[in-house]
Length: 318
Image (cartoon, rainbow, N blue to C red):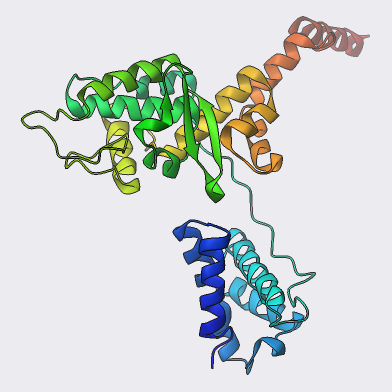
């Protein structure tokens, strides 16, 4: 017998998929995390849900950490267990949550890589006038213009675009819709792409009639294909780093915050549920912030600094 049982896991699977409407990728991660606990429990004489206590969760967490699982993975593992235990209590399989009061090790917060404005301009300048060039230009311009996630871009349909309002409606995490502005360059490239979208050289394509971005076979462009295309463009455009969709999203956020200073607006544009997720971008360009401080603060100008250094030198000679 496994803990949780197959019946309990199936119920949790349906809950995540239909009630919470989570992506298949997220559901898979939740179930994989539970499987890790199930394997641990089977080797430690834990026979039923009611046998699980706080010490079991801590012991398993410690063992996973010793096995090399990092802070981010451990946090997700603990979140998966908590979600399952809440589901178990709603179904009266448990009378208490054995994960209460347990914290996973904090993960090191890495700053995301971003392009500077010149690099972004260089990357967007996709040369050529063929079908692929039109598609790729529209794709990278829209990613950078509106800060889309990879899944949001891949899932776009033509009717998600509103050219008169210059907006795009995307389906984000948790099936939450949000409307985003589209920049003028992205609008131009999208219009050019839609003109040639169904006219691949040499033949009329039998294609997905709804998907905005298509493969050369006429199918909706997959996540993997988008990632591979951006990696290829990185090399062709002479960008040293391998560009991925998330790097363009990070660059969008960083450049927006540098220009506007409005963290709440950037949070809304990115579709972040928590402001703390957006705050990572406030650390990306300290030099830029230092320049603003230096020019704006009445006692922080370069002249004042040099004068102070001169005064200190004179004082030391007296």
